[in-house]
Length: 230
Image (tube, rainbow, N blue to C red):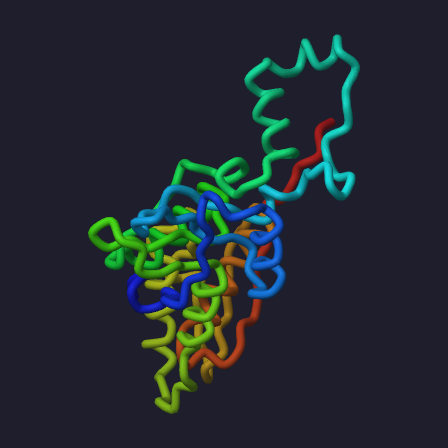
């Protein structure tokens, strides 16, 4: 699947000259956490989010004034000025982030998820030939996951093929079990081996139970023996 398949095309946008109060009302009325900022030509020039309005003098959420010596040590005049603009600016153009990270319609979902995780993004605008055509948010990705839930498998599988499938599922992983550590009897997977963490145990379980036809997973896993020092 690609961005085109899951993106939201009904887009709420702001303009640089919109007041921060109107932007706040849009957040509340539309139940959104952020929106692209577009200029008169429809070009995306920034992103404004609820985070940009967290610290405001109007409701007493501005940053507390620090002693002048501490302020001198911890922040530069540029940082002080930027903080003042965030707290006192009147329009979206004052508080928005103008470093826009966007994606194309053809970007695969795994790349979108990696980008959003790496850059701590809640949503990304989708551009086509420089024009805003959609938005992909975390909720879009979650909806795509919900629609991808596997159907119940009505096919019966023999134990040998299930064993091979479990081994393939763990292939390439450093925590994988060797084939001799996997046994399937009447659809129940029995797993033997030495593990070093609960995370490895859980990963092995997920790999086995994710194979269609496996009815249950039984552990026979052990942690390395510790020989006490004399």
